[in-house]
Image (cartoon, rainbow, N blue to C red; front, side, top):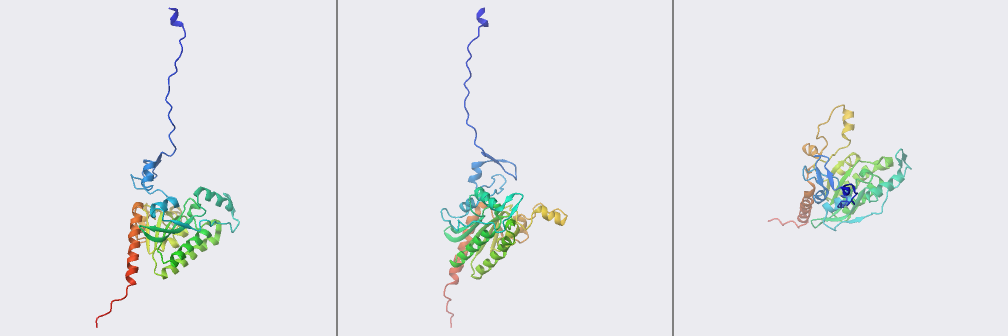
Length: 296
C-alpha cells in the first residue's frame, strides 16, 4: 500500500526536432490573393500560374528571361550617378541615397545595356532596374541609353529596350528632364538609318519615360496588365475630378485605343522578338539584291 505514494522516476517524452521552414516559401499573389509556391513561381518566369499576374523582374532576371543564355555582355557597367545639385530633402542627402540604391539593386545605375542575341539574332539590348530609384531617368541613365543607341547605329544592329520606371529623377532637376530630349534626338538619328527599334513596356512605365523613348518604337509592346501612362491614376482623378475606368492606362486599354501594337505574355516575348528580328534581316537582305534587268 505504501508503494502507491512513492515518487516514481519520470521519463520525458522524446520530441522530434523539426527544422524551421524557410522564409518566403509561399508568395501571395496581389491580384488573385492565392498563395503560390515560390519555386513554382520562379520556374514560371514569376507569372502567377492561377491568374497570370506578372510579378516584377530585376534587370538581371529580365535579361535571363529574354536573351539567349550567356549572350549578354554588359557595357559601361562602371558608370555611376553623381549629385550635380547637392540635393537634400527630408528623406536624406541624394549622394547617400545613391549608395543605398546601388546596394539594394545590386547595380550601379537604373539602366543596363550591352550586346545580346535572341534566337541567334544579334542586337543591342537595354533594360531598366526598377529597384534602383524606381527605374527613374537621371543623367547617367540618359547617357547610357544614348550610348546604346549609337552603338546599335554604328554596328547596324536592331535595338530592343525593356522599360519600367517612374520617369525623370527629381533629385537631378533640369539635368534629368533633358534626358528626354537627348534620348529622343538619338533615336531620331538611329531611325534615319532604317534600323529597327522595339520597345517593351512593363509594369509600371510612367512619366518622362513614357513621354520620350519608351513610346517611340517601330513596334511598341507590353506585358499583360502593365500600368502605362504619364501620370498615376490618383493624380489624374484629382485633376479631372472624376473616376477613371477600372482598366484605364493598362496595356490592354492602350492596345484597344491604338497606343501600342502588342500585348504579349512574358513567356512568349523571346519567340516574338526572334520572329520580328528575322523579318528585319530578311527584308534587309532582299533590299540589297541587285535589281533584275527589265526585259526590252
